Image (cartoon, rainbow, N blue to C red):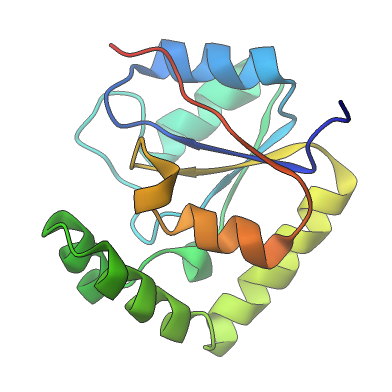
Length: 147
């Protein structure tokens, strides 16, 4: 079995330590944070702290705001309306900011094993599956140990 071209992971229901362990074990070299708002009430998952923790274990970090779900899409996801979230996000992906960050993601994934990071544990309920599909290639969805 060949190595995947891209990984994805969500941090819902896990700890920073478990997430870092899953990334390291999979051989991820760079995390692409695709949250529109890279802040979290969960300890260790806000942009600055997460980036620092990843750097400590030799994993790069890039926040790509343009690949985040706009607020109406996040609201739809929180309401359990995954189809509406997908519709909103798909429309968002036609914006110049989204297209620019998608090109950035393509360049980064061509250079090293990358992992798309967002909140939702289940990739089928998250926009990262859409982004992974747009990037193409073989995708492996990681799941960090539950907290």
